[in-house]
Amino acid sequence: MSTPAGVDFCLKPMAIYIEITKHYETHEKVAYLYSCDHISWGEFLITKESFALESVKELKGEKQNFYMFRAWGKVRKTYLATGEFPQETCYAA
Image (tube, rainbow, N blue to C red; front, side):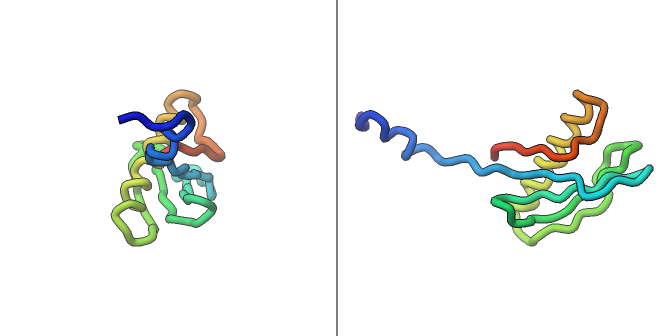
């Protein structure tokens, strides 16, 4: 089965973009907000010593929880590549 030229893109699922913004930073922790389409989905804290998720405030929902872990992974990956906690970043989900 073929589709007319230019129609293929309509049949593929569209990606959503998760925005990750540094909320505040102390000498022990960094807090990030994560959102989609400028709608806040939650906040997570990262301990600087172990990079563990220490505290999570999120909207209820399986998808938001999944995206929070992906957001944490994106911050971690950026930190490991640059040696700095990013002010903001995003990823396509």
